[in-house]
Image 1: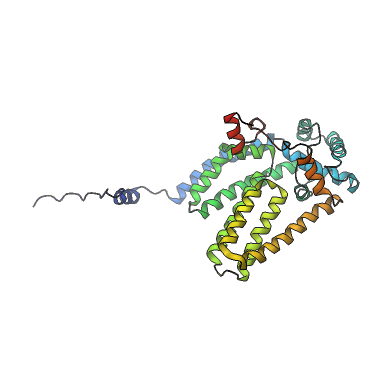
Image 2: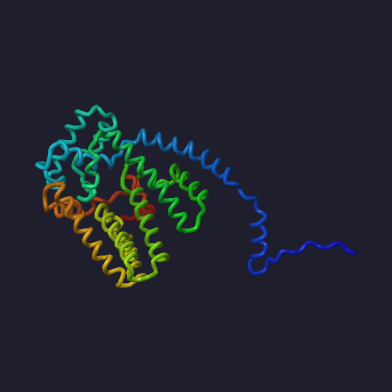
Length: 325
């Protein structure tokens, strides 16, 4: 009897059969090995991140902290930082001179003129962070790291990436993804925004998959949460206005007026309350007008930063490469 020949793999139609066999035969990494890899990777990554946190002075965070610290020290008579920027800067310099904090004294040398470009709501949110500068900065930078890693893992779960791969990418990104490294260095809001947007995307997906009863109370409530959070995040830092608009359009088209309209009304009410809050915080009903006039009225290019200044946005990188303004 002639020997039997091994069956041939069907590589036609894109080799689906061969690919399936290769996938089945490929060795699988056990969970124990995966955990060991993550621990070995996390150790140097987190140590490196902690070293950067220890040495970074938080150039952007300094301005946010300065507004809170100056207002806490001087009281409501100081007004708002867009109408009385010189007063705020003078008060901050007094605090710097009396602090004995090396980080605070170093970062203070970067700012010679008032440059309070953040929105009134942003400074209001950071109002409680008026404590000792170095400790407050380190706490906020720890929040940045946690927010970034959590957002990476959450987005991976939403799009079907396994936990091991997501954690691996997140840990590598802590030391190799320059937008995050830059955000951590200056202690800005990018990582926190990233995390909030990831959560809102998860809520939007839950609204689509679990609450298909368009017009139901749960659907309206979840849609209202998403829209209200996006409104608040946009008022805190308007650079995500286009993202907010795109998600809002998606919700309107996907779930219809019965769900979107009442949710939007709730979000408008939340937005109005959030707009009033800074007025109470600074003791002036003109803070939004003062901020807009200072940032956009006095110099339209005030918020423009190039790559050399640490702006790694797509537009800035493309402009730099093309030699465009």
